Amino acid sequence: MSILSLKDVSYTYKSRYQTVQAVKNASYSFQQGKVYAIVGKSGSGKTTVLSLLAGLDLPSDGQVVYNGTPTGKMDRDKYRREDVAVIYQAYNLFPLLTALENVMYPLELKGVKAKEAKAKAAEMIESVGLTEEVFKRYPAMLSGGEQQRIAIARALAAQPKVILADEPTGNLDTENGANIVNILKSLAHEKNCCVIIVTHDLAIAEQADVVLRMQDGEMATA
Image 1 (spheres, one colour):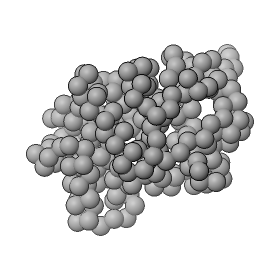
Image 2 (cartoon, helix red, strand yellow):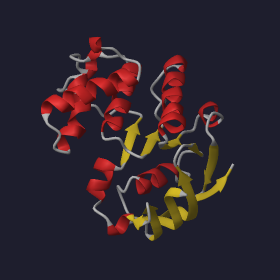
Image 3 (cartoon, rainbow, N blue to C red):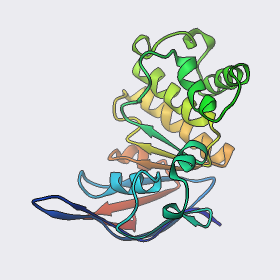
Image 4 (cartoon, rainbow, N blue to C red):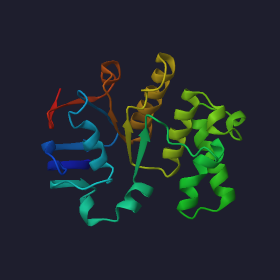
């Protein structure tokens, strides 16, 4: 059974000077326990699809449906806080918080007490292959690979059922990129998450369970 679906989804950007249909009648159902890669050239619509899946915007037409409920009929802030997590190429860590505090942040938003949040954050950091040596370090003191692992640990802290990753290895070298992909695969296959990766890297796509290709706003199974 699918956990997240696109149902005849279209999205149109409108500006003073032009109208661009970024996504055209996209339909697909995503399941837990699998890694999906959405590939395509720049401007093909793949990042727009990710934003719609994350509830950052609503489709111009059609519906994005999570567990039977369209995102247009739910509290989308709560959806992103509790059910779906987004991992970005640029990491998006808070520069004035330590690694541990960054991972604690979504837990504290949910009202988890500090002691419990700290213990859970430590567990999440260790689950992505880092040790307590990084707990008190600020993002600027971490390597790119370490920062992306902290970003993943922060995403995992809220125990989301869906993980959306936007070019998660784009700023990393080959070894660190491979490590991040392996972490995302284990989250799907061992933790039963639905992992959706937007990427232009075909080497990453080859490791996905399902590859979807975006071209001129249209989606098809590769």
